Amino acid sequence: MGGGFGFGGHGYNQRAARAGMRLQATPRPWPSASADESPRVSCRTEASGVNGSTMTDLSTPSASTLSASEATPAWFLKLLDRSAASEGDAFECRGEKLIVAGGIVRSQALASQAQEQTSRAFGFKWQKRDTFESEESLTRTRTWLIERYGQVTEETWFAGHGEHPIVLDAGCGAAMSAIELFGSKLDRIRYLGVDVSEAVDVARARFIERGANAAFAQVDLLRIPLAPESVDVIFSEGVLHHTDSTERAMKSLVPLLKVGGHFLFYVYRTKGPIREFVDDYIRQKLQAMKPEDAWAAMMPLTRLGKALGDLDVTIEVPEDVDLLEIPAGEHNLQRLFYWHVFKAFYNPKMSLEEMNHINFDWYAPMNAHRQSPEQVRAWCAEAGLVIERENVQEAGITIVARRAR
Ligand SMILES: C[S@@+](CC[C@H](N)C(=O)[O-])C[C@H]1O[C@@H](n2cnc3c(N)ncnc32)[C@H](O)[C@@H]1O
Image (cartoon, rainbow, N blue to C red; front, side, top):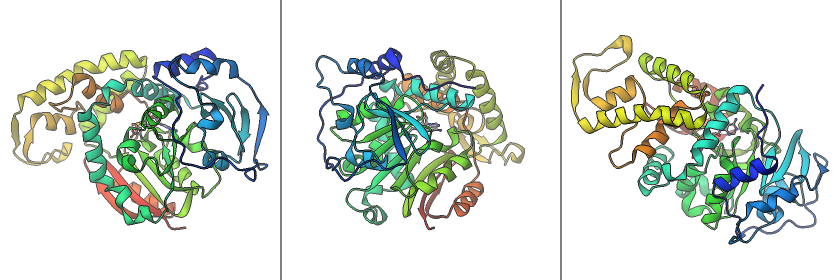
């Protein structure tokens, strides 16, 4: 079931070009791979030069091209037990068949059908950069991240991981959240963005635009070819619930973390019964559509959310409706619909396209599991994670946890 990620040949090049990818020379704060960083037995080269001829198409006439080995930081090569990674190199690492394409290490493994659909939906969404990159959208994202995780780069625990912590962004998408959260320290951390979709190309382009060096891999986060205890921090914002199993995804990442390392993640929380029903219903309808058709199908709902929001009326729910988990009290009409009927995001400062981006993010992926805080706490305990910060909101559950064993 499902198919490969489809990055071979011109199809990949065209998609990368659509993602606005520019391979430009960037400052490289990390030392080059030294001679003693030779490959160990766990990773072996199978072939070289695969796809090499097509990859030169990625640069534009105005952009200077970096070779993949230059674009792949030395510390990442070391994590992969390699001394170099040239464009088109195919190799096996810890049981995963990988290939370097467009400066990104990519897996050729098959995804499940649900995961494949989810990957396609996100690959499509993150390429629509104008729907999430306005100052209004990014400020909103940044504020919400800091509210939940704290000012991460200023925290004592973060400093405890040294000057150049390895930060694995598991399910990086376009690296929107990572760039907003680690912003001022981007050039200092050793950032590894991993995503199952082609969003990694957009993430890489966005790092290059900021002159920050980083490593990227298009692999399933359940099959990241790193040795146990390789990374200092794992950040997984809004991702684990998009895999086939939130619990399995979370638990598969923990071993990659050094003991004492920190795991920051956010997962969806279970909502009331009407919203759960409607969400499943809409998701089921959309998952049969092509991403662009699903985007269009979301628009009327987005407009309805805007109409409700523009009304700016509140209503009084006279008493708790326990059967539907609707609490008594004053509710803004749009918020009442939002939390209890369907998700139609509203922010008067945002465009319809930006609001549609948020609704699409919620409804388009087939995989979008919801959890209770109790479930998440139990999984953390079972995985040897000690929760140091917990933020539970109607929308979701945010955790900062330390690996204790
Ligand atoms: C809602 S987006 C969040 C992106 C990013 N963390 C952010 O907050 O800006 C979820 C991302 O998880 C990725 N994803 C879903 N399942 C994945 C998997 N099994 N392995 C890696 N990435 C996955 C999707 O492709 C998508 O880019």
